[in-house]
Length: 279
Figure (cartoon, rainbow, N blue to C red):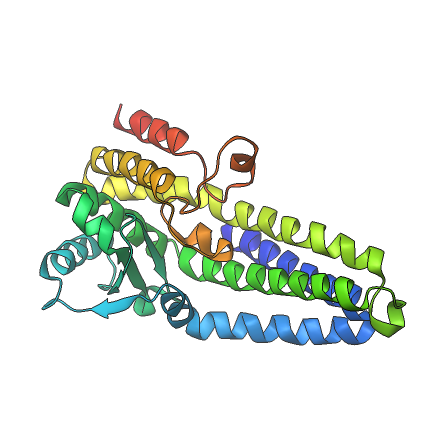
């Protein structure tokens, strides 16, 4: 059932991209968008880890350079029945982390330098366990594909914005209906965000619960989530919105109405579920 839902979500993102191409350039635009969607899915499958790590200037490290981090990861991976993933450091003071890759054998866990500096070892253990849970559940490929497709739709929306400014007066065959482009400019990125939310939100709860089992207690992750959320509100990470759902907590500052469109469930609800698990 999980695989079927995932396929449906990614198919919907592909359809949105094709519709955006149709609105932007008619039948030819639709065919180009379909080819673009296929290429993006293939690229995300094979090179998602490299693409995302490069976006955040993350640098891979080994056991000699980060012995404590590697030891914790190796220990947790053994408990989870996983191969030890590669590790990478993101140069940012904001504590956060994500996992990426196409499968457990090609997974990477990336953590910020701020996470290592500001969290206690047990809290880091909870964060690593959460990311390993995503790897075990094979969420990382799904999340990476969704990020690439949502980013592509956002790019088409930007193209529509320029088309409206510089060529919106022409008819559909000459470059796109201005009203249709305006719809794409507003509706398509919002629809892509909603699909990202559907892919991401429920998976965070499952990863939290699995992390508590790997560690042996939900308390380290509960403490870590509180610290990470406070840090994200105080010092947001400079993150691409299309990849925000990859992180353990939303790296973008948001509140009020904006929280309704967050790719992550509220941290308070996640902690409440972990507390219920402890009881």
